[in-house]
Length: 134
Image: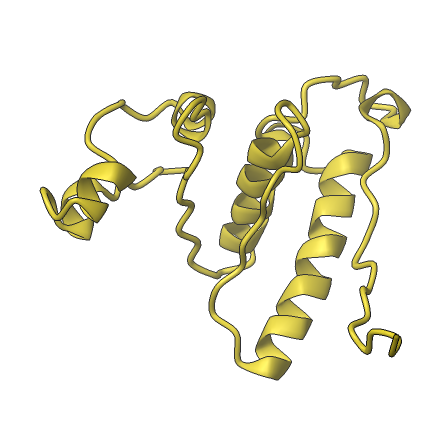
């Protein structure tokens, strides 16, 4: 069998929340709440590595998927998007978790029509996209 030529590159590591001297355990929106903390700094480091790769290759889309429930994918997505926005980039987050969506709750936006309605052609993208002011 021929060895795979696909390589995986580590773009950064997030420390355990208990290692952050700020004492913040919940990492939801930590880039906004504790911008000088260790975890927020690591999100910025990962953001820069991702943007460098995406810009060099001309990519416009990034997919983040969680391997299992409660693995932190939603918090990761939200913090990376906030980091992108604070860096002057636009970010559109799509919560495709049909069983337990959590991005809306974390961002404090209203629950309403969403991805399923868009896929069924019941609404347009402009009807369901909600802006987060901060």
